[in-house]
Structure formats: C-alpha cells, structure tokens
Image (cartoon, rainbow, N blue to C red; front, side, top):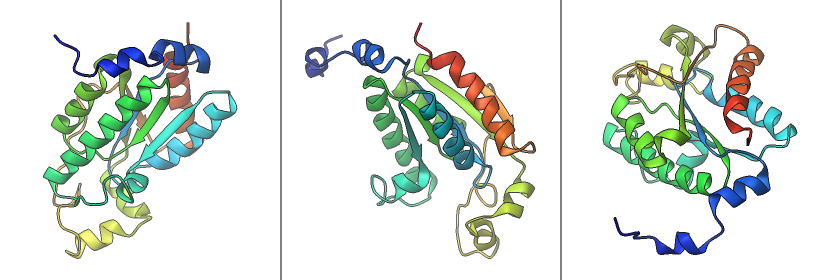
Length: 197
C-alpha cells in the first residue's frame, strides 16, 4: 500500500524518540460512567509517573471539550466524532514517544473499537473504571446526574443513554477501594507496559 504520508519517513522516528525519553509510548484509555473516578485516578497516576521520570500526557473530556471539540454536543453521533478526534490526537502523541492517559466515558463498544483501530491495537490498553451508577450519582460532583434526572440534560450516559461495559478490558479497577489503591493498580499495570526494554 502506498504511503500517503511520506513526510513521516523524513521525521525523527518514534523509536528514536522513545529512546530519547526512555519509555515505551502507548495509551491507557480509561472508560466508565461520569463520576466513576477516571480523572481523579488519572491525575494521581500522572503525578506519580512524572515523578518517576516518565513523560505523560493526560487527555480528559473537559479539556478537550473546551477547545478541540467545543463544537460537539453529547449526542451519540457527536460522541463518536469526539472520540475519533481524540484517537487521532492520541495516535500523533504516541508517534512522538509520549505515554497517554485518556479519560473518556466512551460509552459504546463500537466507539471504543474505533479508537483502538485508529491508535493501533498494540498501543491501546482499555481500562474499565467499574463504579456502579448509584455510586456515581451519589458523588455527582458536577451536578450532571441531578440535571439529567430533571430532564435538563438529554442523552446522558447511564440515565437515558446506554453505557456498554467492556467485554475484555486490559484492566478493571473497582473504585470501591481508595483512590490511592485504585491508582496503584493502574500504576503497576502501566509500569509493566511503558518501561523500554
């Protein structure tokens, strides 16, 4: 197949950048309901790994929605486009040797499969933050569940739009344990994948 992006062959290679950064680039894609703890875990993990000398990029729904995807709604079609853009951005980051932690509801199996295909299966690790809906609603740190129950938000995942649990995630984390314990599970898993051998 003809290379339609020949400029990539003229740039510093991913392998050379990974050697420079002394790490293996890939993405840890955290999926779960809103309020499940994805971002809280990611922030903790990013700090720990950064302090260990790794170069990390956390891509979160809020920081993407404020810029790159600020023209998208929360309809299923726009959610798919949101994830497509994120996956393309992630693939570019991985090419630069960067370890990515992505925190997105990404509610359907098809949407997550699309992301994996764009990024590449060998670089994609799906992390299921398995928090029951009741616990997410109880936290409701942004007040979104309350608004969804009142009909102020339509198509809210877990209320009037489905969340499809992953069939075979790379790792499942139950946030019934502490944030530190949940983060430690992810750190241990990540360290087994990002150390350059």
